[in-house]
Length: 277
Image (cartoon, rainbow, N blue to C red; front, side, top):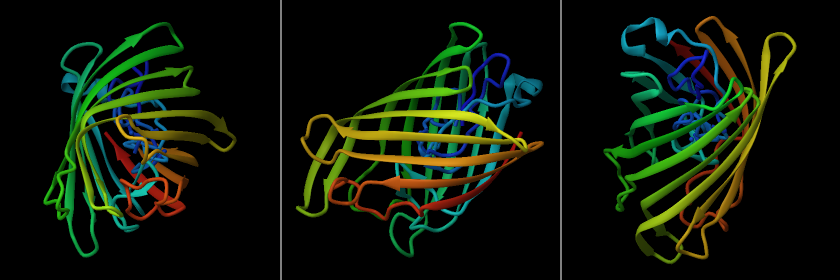
């Protein structure tokens, strides 16, 4: 879920999930720690945690690269986007000029029981390399939900700033100016609300070519004094050439805290497999 530019790939190589989040690219939605179980993921999401990793996209025209993934549950910021069912996800990106990346990420969804939808997230990002170990990324992402069965539009935009140090510590702050929030318990609708997401994670190599990651996040509606909640994840990954396997554990606060996000909590244990190109 993340990539870090030099000498690793310049594209969003989604990592696991602060599984969607720690949330897919430099520090893009991938790095989003999406604390997402995608594989941002997104992630993030959790995912989440996006840690940069080697890839071969620079060998393709315009830095073309991407991935195709299967996950046993699509978890975004601690909450299942697939009714605790499996999801297929894909991402493609190009690097038209140095330090810039443009791409899109997509996933199948089950936003309500017995429904089928698609999430598409086009994004553009820029990366600054501070030194050999430290980089800074800014990313703009649009979240679009196609064939959404819900009565309220949940499409929104997000601007995120993320940083990664020595492929070990990751932090991300994401701000949205136009998120629609619906309180199901009181049937209250708040349009074009500002929200803030703060995420952080830690990555470390393990024996037997395994990698471990742990992350946590906080979701904050800025104009309301309710709906704030915390989430987190921990997991291990194993790379087999262009194939990556992940096992993640997700945690999120109860529905009493996340009153604007009343869907099922993500499955505690999520398995994902991803092919990268």
